[in-house]
Length: 137
Image (tube, rainbow, N blue to C red; front, side, top):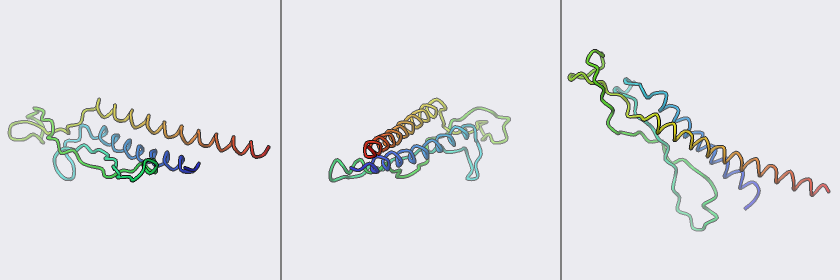
């Protein structure tokens, strides 16, 4: 494993977590969106990381990759509001099934993982600078 492999691995992790943070932020921003272009409430999205089948352990550390961004088709929360123009015949409005506490917990996890990868890149830079100073004499 070379010096640049560590930076590449951390960088791929940072890219994956940045996408995850963007998706989570969109979920939080649309927690009250009851009407979308497709019709109905906003559907929560989530990032799925790719599981790879590796032949040897060192291959596992090559890259973090996102397989897909999936839509959560969990039924919406129904809130009784008969005066709302979007209410169904029974007086219920469909709201996204987004739990802000869960989304914030996921966001904190993604941020901490991103920060951990940033620390890896910083450590690799410091090691490279130390190696260069030793070579300079």
